Length: 253
Image 1 (cartoon, one colour):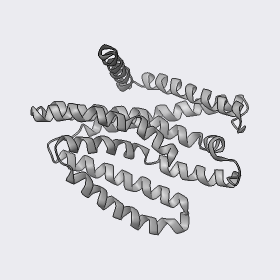
Image 2 (image 1 turned 45 degrees about the horizontal axis):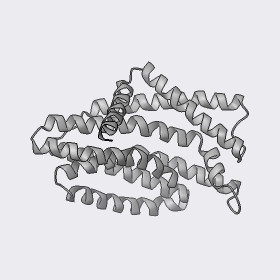
Image 3 (image 1 turned 90 degrees about the vertical axis):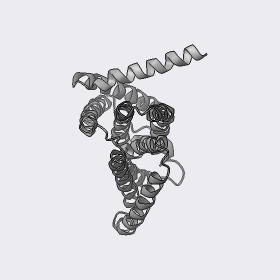
């Protein structure tokens, strides 16, 4: 859960905080088309950043858990069980992240009730699925249930947002999602090959940690290259977005 919360706190929450005042201004002025574009852009940017994080967590689940937690009573069996749970959590990472942005969109509309109602229904859904899956799948079932309820929450928020005349460009969002998955899988495959050439990531020491860090850097670089290769315009937009933020920050200072 801590590993899943890290990319959520790093990307979607920050973008949601930045999006809220901009959306409020656009909606107050009645510029619905601009508001739709702002939400769609932010959601696509979150997917571009969060999907490779999800794939990376799945691909390197064993060395990550081993480096961080395998000591004392937390043995190899615990690492294996925790790694499986991490995979189940990673499945819904895009939904947790996207929901943060969509909730900010409802807040900009001065609607605080709808996200709470949707979350309440999803909690009930989560409890029912927990009771069904916790016995055959144990802790993996609980994590998978969290992912499924997160995806339901995300889907309901998108549907209800469209009923408030803020229908997003769903086709463009889906295309971005598919391209991100393909680029991320390609990057992780390349990094896995490199790791096998250099002897794996079995060491739970400084050398293993350094290898894991270098593998992450290599994965990021390869992801960006593959994303550009398959024509993901979001990569350019992302660089332009962060460049603009840095410029604004420097000008303020």
